Length: 298
Ligand code: NAP
Image 1 (cartoon, rainbow, N blue to C red):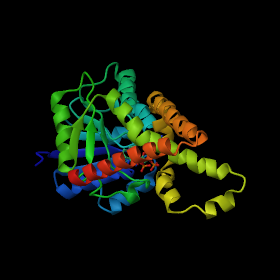
Image 2: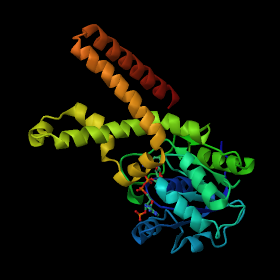
Image 3: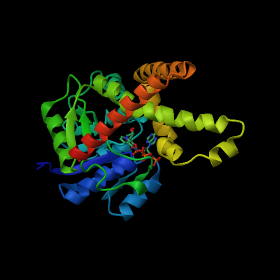
Image 4: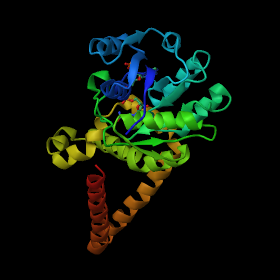
């Protein structure tokens, strides 16, 4: 059971994740007042009409007005936009307000906070909900998006214990389970499990698109293609930012992937049915074990 209760929740970037968090906390009733600032006014109007937020703010200054210790401010913007947002927050937000984010890479945020604040402030708690979809925008937000999903908290060296606890309680209130690791470890792990699969999906679709007879090629693309490439429908801007912010870890994963492809290619050239079978059986067993584990933990 979560102990989370707050007078005010403030969201910068009211998209799929920021909107879903606002909805989830609204549903629990543990926040008295929810306000948001967004680059485009459309999302704010929609959220006001739907009762997702109580107040639409016209600037980050207005968003921060009257926020006090105990209140929580969430960054729901793409990864590379977090630095410029922190620059605007720096002079405007009271030091006791807990600031957290939902970005898909974590070392970048900590480095940007160090650049803006001199050192990562104790009230900043980097976090990443491992939940979402290839949809985007507040219109696609859902109150149950985080239920039974993991949220990774990645405290930096200067992170305050009370702020960390507050963010933990906030996500527990949304029905999520919590893990904790360093920002660097997070970026390594997610580089493999999330960022590399997006690279492969985008590149496969791009490859097929560039093939001479693409009209005919795509006509014969069936369920396997659809399953494998679903995530290539994700928002290109969001994924561009993730690629840039986690470029070193992603490059290393691409190198490893190339080595594995080379192994399969060598097996094809050698006509080694045994080597191919071995790779496929190992992959199939690993995926079965993963599915079983996911079922048990959900
Ligand atoms: P989204 O639905 O596209 O929402 C992004 C929000 O950020 C929108 O409100 C957008 O405003 C605003 N924004 C975009 N560029 C901006 C800029 N340059 N400056 C200021 N605001 C800007 O995306 P999302 O899926 O919610 O993603 C938000 C964050 O969650 C990202 O950091 C992403 O890495 C992370 N995340 C996403 C998922 C997922 O599956 N989608 C899962 C976990 C974490 P407009 O309305 O004006 O466009």
